[in-house]
Image 1: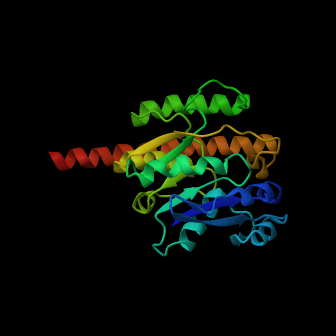
Image 2: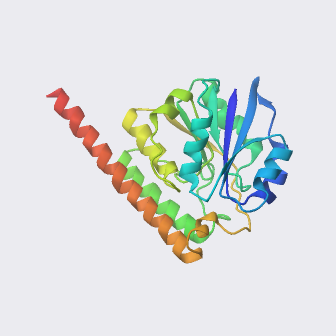
Length: 247
């Protein structure tokens, strides 16, 4: 079974067109979706229910990281062969699901990260602020982790159950994508990037939900920076412990 987790905050509109496009199965594995409505005040839950999708309704808004942990607690029944995280705002194309999970089904890796830049690293239609943040983070993580990830903030990802159990989702909002990359490197998990479509809609970014457009985005940047500092310290501590054991 492929469990598809979709955190959502006021995404009734995008879900109306997105949910009917989800495949019923991929490579003989049933696709079972779960929409986690994170404090939505629109009809997100109603739309998902009408399309036969299970939901979790969190109130009030608690952040994407909290929504992810709620979903993981819900699916701890051992039936999933692959767990996929997919944004509910239309930025991720269901047509990319098959190629996203293929390396996992073929046993090539532990984690697959969708990359909007694997095929073309030029800016293209990416908003300038996002492209600059992404470029700076790519360079920084390359130095810290010794591995280059071309799209570190993409939330379209697939995990094997054992790999997902190794990752620690500690942040309550947008820290999870970075936490995964650090924990994969810390724990020796293999990560493969797969090219996916680059889609940017006209809607307001959910990063603005907490404090407005400017304050909200500054808070997210602070969360990113805090996560990199926190996980870098953890990575260094792990390396010291390993070296001490070898002495």
